[in-house]
Length: 215
Image (cartoon, rainbow, N blue to C red; front, side, top):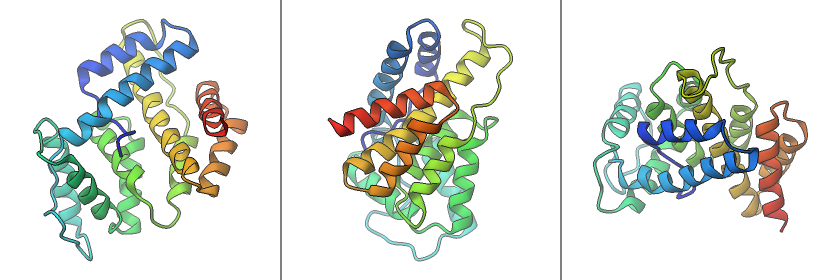
């Protein structure tokens, strides 16, 4: 899933600096460039906690916790075959229980967690293609951006708000990707966001993705 990202803390600060000093179009394009750059990093810099080709029928609570910890800790360790890592991650995610999928969603929405843990959780959720997967992505997008009080230039709140929008754009990208593959429900949900989102940035970004699909 080369359209998803893992960006480092340094790039996050660069992204945040760009985020509020450019026009809306430039702002989104810069974030998209960061997303594209880091899509390879999440594959090249993550080491799977699963044995290659081994399917697990049921993921225990301990295995689930260890999997997340291992993936996040080893993000800086290169792997020889990122395609296998991606396949193993997808296999793992699609064997999680409903409660474990919900835990991934909770991690994504928890702004108190380290950003790398949230981004990896988001990456994993985008690989989930089980029941209600499109609806799960839609619900993540619909969750409001936290209200940051001190969004000043180069402030911590500015960085955090930029991170929140980057996560939302990743989610919109996944709905767009599924729409391009002929997933009608994903297209309908993307269209709902483009028409009805109360957040102007998210609404505009979804509209742009729709135009790309339709052309």
